[in-house]
Length: 166
Image: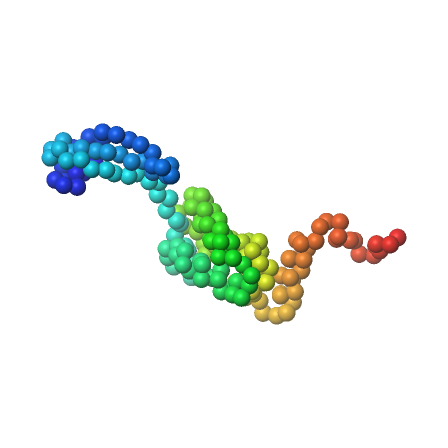
């Protein structure tokens, strides 16, 4: 580690401790040249993958853009800011833990849809209509039917031709 005072690279670690939060290491150091002391911190840096758009161009992941998309779908819906923050954190964690250096924008769209389905069904349909480019009412109906099937317990799903009272 280079000394911030004299730029000498010969420094000695005097003390090492974990931070109070446990997410970094604090090291107290002394320069062997000028003998001044300083502190350094080591933190894990997990880089987000680069986003590969449909046209093949690449861009950095932007959490603000993710939040904007979620908020647009959730506009005027009864979903708390904490719930939105939780969804964003889950998406970011999935991206980080994927271990991929690049990820297709479509995969992020699918992660967003999964989170919106958990948060608010109307917001999910709004987002899906744009994301999947619905062109007619039948596509809306299919998306709504998909939600209805997931919402109903298995016993509520009956085979055609059987009645409940027999």
